[in-house]
Image (cartoon, rainbow, N blue to C red; front, side, top):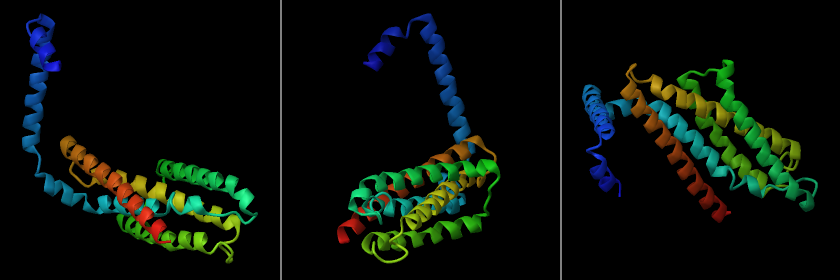
Length: 207
């Protein structure tokens, strides 16, 4: 339908001007792309921040929401119906706070971003223990679950945001290269969510 519409309208004076503008943009974009480095060189530069973002999202979605939604309240099974939405709401609040934290001046060096992103792996066995051993102290207490969820969510928001900010900064001040870096960082973010979700389903089935 679109090609036929374009064929019918190509003789219109306004359409001719639009097609000329479109053609010039294509040529300009082609010329700019020729001036950039190979894509693999750009990906090599952003490998570290891409890994940071990927690892953060993978760890997060390995246990959230698969393990968190199976937490139990210390007040009994009746209270668990309201407890799970409350814990989930806690995640949303502190994740949002973490994502706004860089605007307030919070910064971490690339080395510390790697340390924190990998250190968050401790939440995987921790959340599994909270689910599997609900009567063991301190896993029994509701306040402990809320505190752990707050740290878990805040660290996710901070590190993921700083990692996404670091990616485009790793390439020279060239708009096209930064655009490629942004696409690559977005892919790593989505891939981390996918891999983490797969791990989450796998762990849930094993338990």
